[in-house]
Length: 317
Image (cartoon, rainbow, N blue to C red; front, side):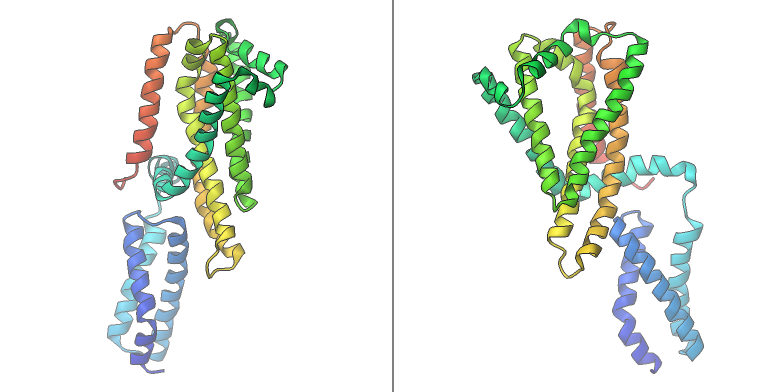
């Protein structure tokens, strides 16, 4: 093969590499694009070695050397220090991934909130509706749990509840996330199931005259907990779609590509759930704080979460 034909056959490949190189330099590449970039970098190195071996001319060799050197610097010389990785993940990679897959986040939100709203309104208009979903004992326990005296705990109780909330929240999040492996059906089911449970429980608490203490208790930590569950559900739906519509890829390859993004989303959601458990255990049930303070802080928490997901990571750190 002569140098001209070699360059013609690989020109499109080299252009794709340059485009991905620019995106990686700007920290704007998705996980699948990063995987593709690593593959292209190895191919560029192979082409450089081949051009040198066959003596394809200084101009082509210099061009390939420049491309390979730029990739090498990105992969090996600009790698962030380990202590910078957590902040980069939380302040850049995670919120970017949420925005990148906003359609799945929106669908997950609707699957959770619409059943919750419908069942809540239905139960408020017909209290017997709650008994078709939960037993008398379960409804009584929910009401007792959210009476002001039962919300207040000492430090030892807070600590034990923190462990409980971690396990409980992570369990729900894992269900809606891992359910995506069943072609997304599991994610849809668990999102709707948890939405229905939340709607029934909220309506029953309101009917028992506990509206103010209940929402004062949940408003702060729910900003992180509910958002994290919705993000986990969106990640599960993303995986399910990869299986349902693999395009021209093999189904396993499509799942692997979707899972790379989904795990990024699930990791960020897990961090939010830990924060939610801390707030629920040590803030939400505190008897030292008046309801007005809890409502004010809770409102700020919801606004803060929204601004974080909308704005974080838009500028390179």
